[in-house]
Image (cartoon, rainbow, N blue to C red):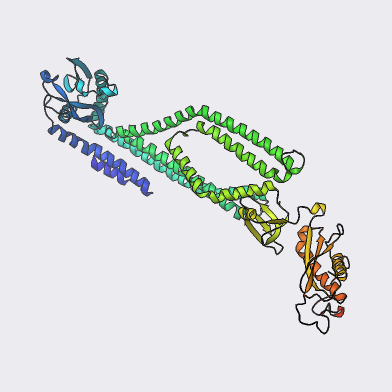
Length: 573
C-alpha cells in the first residue's frame, strides 16, 4: 500500500510550493493511516493488563490524576478513580487492550451499558470493556453516572466503526482517492483564481482611469489614477487572500475527515469554523437592537447638525439677522455647534455600541485619553487663542493687518494659526497664541466708513515755515493715487525737537490692500513737491547752515536712467 501511495504521489505536478506541500501532507497522512496506526495499536495491546474481576468493581477511591480513554483517536471517557489497585492510567491501558482484541476479531458491536450495584459496565457484544464508578464523575460540573455512560457508549460506537474502517485497506484507499480529488480540485481552483487575479489587477487601473477621465475630462488622469488604482488593487489582494484561506481551510477539513484516525481533527476544524460563524451571526443578531438605536441617535444628531448649519450659513451670508450671532463669527459658531452635537451623539450612543463594555475597548479609550492629555496642551492653547480671535472679531479673511513685525493681507484663519500674504508675495504663518499675545493693527476694519488710513512723517528744520511744509505735504497727497479726498488728508506737527520739527501726514485710502504701493507713491510725490519749491528735506544736526540748499532741481528729476512716468490721471506717480 505504501508503494501504491508513493507512485500516486509522484504523478501529482508540483506547480506551486504551497500547493505541493498540501498534497504532500495528504499522502503522508494516508501512509500513516495504512502503515503506522495498526503498529501503534499492536504495541498498546502488548503492554495492556487484564480487566479487574467483577467482584472487585465497587472497591474504588478517587485519586488526583485523571486520564482520558482515547481509542482510534476518539475521546471515549475520563477515568478519575482508582479501582482496587488499578490507577486511572492502568484502567485506560486495560480498556485499550480489550478494544484492540475485539477489533482484531472484527467485533464492533453492539455496544451497551448496564448498572450493577452502583457501577456502570460498558460492554461490546458480550465482553465487558470498561467500568464507570461514582468517583469518576465530576459532580461540581453537574455530571451524572448515567449521562457519562451514555456519552461513553455513543463515543465507543463511533470509535469501533472507525477502527474497523482503518483495518480495511479498500476503504482507506477510497478515502485517499477522495482526498486526492479534493487536492486536485484545490489546485485547479487556485491556479484559475491566480489568473483571474492577474487580470483584475491589470484591469483595475484601466477602470479607474476611465472613471477619472470622465470626471476630469481627461486631464492628468495617470497621476490621479495611481493612488486610487493602488487602493483598488489592495482590495483585490485582500479578497484573493481571504478566498485562498477559505479554500485551504475547506480542503484541510475535508481531507482530514476522509481518514478514520484524522477524522476527529477534521470535525474539530469544521466545528471551530461553524462555531466562529455561529458566534458572529449570534452577536450580530443580538446587537441589532442596539445598532438600530445607535443609528436613530446618529440620524437625529445629523438632522440637528443640518438645521444648525442652515441657520448659521444664513447668518454668515447676511440673509438672517439675530442678536446673538454676527456674520464674522457665524462660520466658527457653526463648526463648534456641529462638533458639540456630534460629540453628544457619540457619548449617548457609546453604551449601545457592540463591544463597548469589553476590556479591549476600555483599554483603547484610556490610551487615547492619556495620549490626548499628555500631547494636547499646546494644541489646546492654540485652539483657545483661535476662539478668542474669532469671537473678538479682531480680523477676518481679506483684512490688511499688522501683527507684530508682520504686515499683510489675511489669507486664512484656522483653529491653530493665521496666515498672512505679504505685499512682497510671501506667506507668513502666525500661531494664534502669538497673535493673541501681541497687538494687532487692522487697517481694513473701518475702511467702509473712511477709517483706513496711512501715515508717514518727515522732519524739517525750523527755518522753513510750517505753513509751507503743510501745503507741500497736502500737495503731495493730492497728487497720489488711492488717497481719498473725503475725509481730507491732514498734517500734524508731532514734535518740536531740538533741531527740527516732526511733521506727520495722515491720508485715507480707497483700497487698503494697495497700502504698500500707495506709501511708495506718496513718498515719491513728497520728494517731488519739496524739490519743486526748493525746500530741502533734512534733519539739521549741524554746526552751521550749508552754503546752498540741499534740493534736487526740476531738470534733474528725471535724470537717466529715470524716465518721466505719468500715472493714469496724468499726475506724476
